[in-house]
Length: 398
Image 1: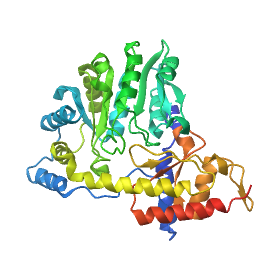
Image 2: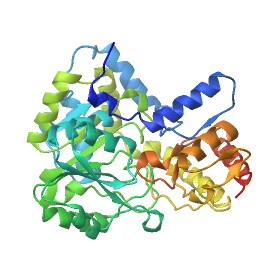
Image 3: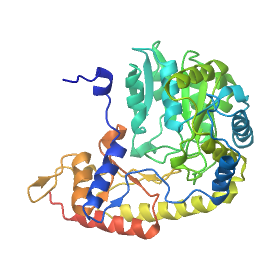
Image 4: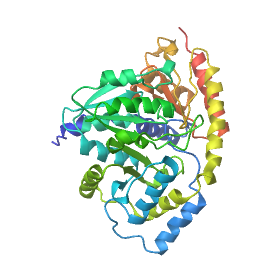
């Protein structure tokens, strides 16, 4: 009899991946499912990046690479951080990993001891909570809602910090809400962190370029807390490179060395071919892929107007990323036949099985009254998805 470890038994399955798998299972049975559960752009990787990868193969970037990544790629990332974010890092302070997800996990494992507190604003990306728990940290959630555009205040942050707080993790723009902090809002939070020198901050900036309101500001550009901020980023979202699996951190030398150490034991560096493709993205003019951002803007409008046309649903206006996070609690307690919708999980399964639209329940993100829908799909697909959702919800009876 095989007995699995407690750590794996206690680790929750990724809700986004689970819903996407259910969607694929139905598709394999011939069901016409629209999958709005995964955060993956429907664009292909730009041709100039693919050409860089082909060149890397021809030039034999096919051997083991240095654990933190090729020096020339880390230099390109350092230049990108100076150019786009006003951040000054040496290549020795940058670690390239197999996706931003590994960058986050490396960081959490290197910083958090059992019992230390990890503050996470809710709603949060599904894996933050599980990563902190896997490191045996104690998760402290700061609840936010539709009314505040899902952003915390300095007062909430101050109240959550204790003598046992080790780490704060957040994303801006946010997955799942699309909320994005302004420079003034981040500077106000930075003032709180200044008063607590033992607290480190993970700033997940994977959606920095997908922003519709305001401009991106990196928390690490505040000099007083620079050395305690770990900036996490990658190429998956803005460059449509999800399958290339390249993420990175920029941090203090001590944290970068620690992440290199753990990566050396677990995975070593990611593919050299993927790294050289990422280098091309880092060096490119971001304007070359502005067509993606313009498309997301159109899709955002389609989704906002469509979801607001459904009686009872409330929807904010996302400032970035490509997600909508409507409040759906008005559906709870309603029924169709012998099927009763008690919560967001019930609603998500109803929409999948009846409307054939895959979404993700807000409970996976620490917000029970919501659903997450990705609008990283073509306009006609989104219009059809909204039509199906509207029809299914209007069939529910109190």
